[in-house]
Amino acid sequence: DKYEVEHSEFKLEKKLGEGNFGQVFEGLWNGTTKVAVKTLKQGTSEQESFLKEAKLMKKLRHPKLVQLYAVCTRSEPFYIVTELMCNGSLLDYLRDHEDLNQLILIDMATQIASGMAYLETNNYIHRDLAARNILVGKNNCVKVADFGLARAIKEEIYESTSKKFPIKWSAPEAALQKKFSIKSDVWSFGILLTEIIGKGREPYPGILDGAKIQSLTQQNASSNTNILTGWDTKEILPHVERGYRMPQLPDCPDSLYAIMKNCWDADPKNRNSFETLLWKLEDAY
Image 1: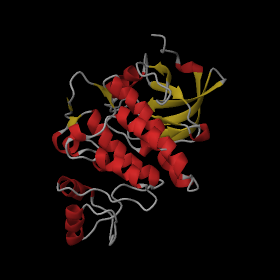
Image 2: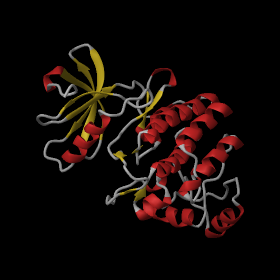
Image 3: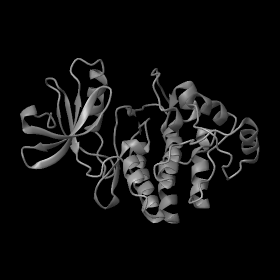
Image 4: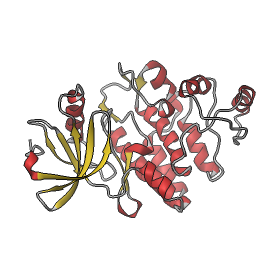
């Protein structure tokens, strides 16, 4: 395996993040190349998932996907070593750079669509597409990352037995029936677009009173008023099932909101492919 190297080749430096099963560090490879090193805690039950992610990343080669450099999987602690994206997650970057103009934001969305179109063409699904899992490099270059839930699919639909999924980003068929496809990733892309245009805004940022929700659902209104408190996550799916969709943000062009609404079509077959989303974004902006 050309990717398999020894732990001794890496010096772990600044910690970039931490999750339930491991940590991510900025590191040096052979004392010269800056890299990101994802580590797995020793003794965790997630070893198999970690190895699956490493195996999958070896097959994914595209300019808009974070690239795998090396792995250390012969002995613990396991490492997945990737290119270092110097500006961290898109979610944090958006919240820290409120001066980003609309053209830059749409260009970021276009870059993400390019990476996802590659996954689509090669029959992969991501299953966790969100601003937190997009990384930012120099000059507002963004790449799709975190392939821990990604899968290669032989059929159009992948049925998952996992009980863990990000409800606010999940298509109804994925959340309720555990049926994932590239079109459920398209739904998540629509949610991601709201994060980008809202510069890191949380999806479904407020809960409306029952009468207002019913009115918005029926009218498919494009303004969101009378916001009270934060959504209780378990309340989101029933409203979405009844037809509620996030309304248009003040800074969101009509053409982009039309793309979002298509991403959120109740019938997955009616949602655009990532290839179509890519050329729509490129042509419009």
